[in-house]
Amino acid sequence: MNDTELARAVAEEAGALLLAIRRRGDCNGRALGDRGDAQANALILDRLRAARPGDFILSEESVDDRARCAASRVWIVDPLDGTREYAEGLDDWAVHIGLAIGGRPSIGAVAVPAAGKVYATDDAALPRRPCAPLTIAVSRTRAPEIARLTAQAMGAAMLAMGSAGAKAMAVVEGRADAYLHDGGQYEWDNCAPAAVALAAGLHASRIDGSPLIYNCENPLLPDLLICRREIAAAMLAAIAEARSV
Image 1 (tube, rainbow, N blue to C red):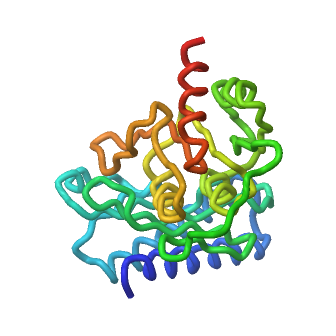
Image 2: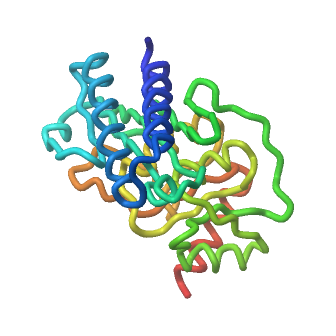
Image 3: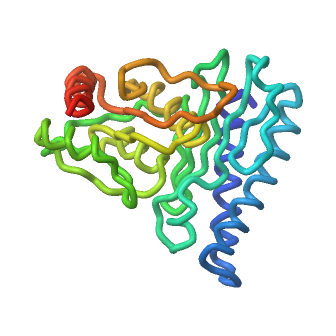
């Protein structure tokens, strides 16, 4: 398998495992989320280590080996993005399998298992049309104030959703025009979604327009903009204005 095929296969298998764990119904709430996180993480690490033994892995659910900082190839994974949604029986949670090469989000697969979908960097170019009105995907539980101000400035509606992967894939699919986040994300939250979005021809950057850089010593990567390319300049200008308020 090439890297994209591997990412897709691992994301799909981890998603199937998470669905099976939830269907068993022998735990719920935080215990269900913890079990899903741990078992999906173990599966992902096993598969990636077996297939790419020379690569490093940065996972939300594992101890960080800082030796990765000197490596060119680092898999950046979130075994269960949207643990709250998963534990509450909702559908908008995801599995992220990303590969940063030279610090760039190069390969990725995002599984949204409850919807039966896997989006990957070799098949992400889907037809899209602008939403009416312009729609910005935001966090259901902690929508940033900058998103509200930006939406107001652009006359946009806000679409509240769960995981970062689900929101980013809403833009890939054309159910939203943009996904805007500010505060509290790490590299595993957005590496795979950014890789898929870029492969789909979308804009993906920090909210100041600077590029997304991965495999940093500190994996904090707190803000993100994914949007249709034709609105990127207007979005960045509106964000800059909102930040100055």
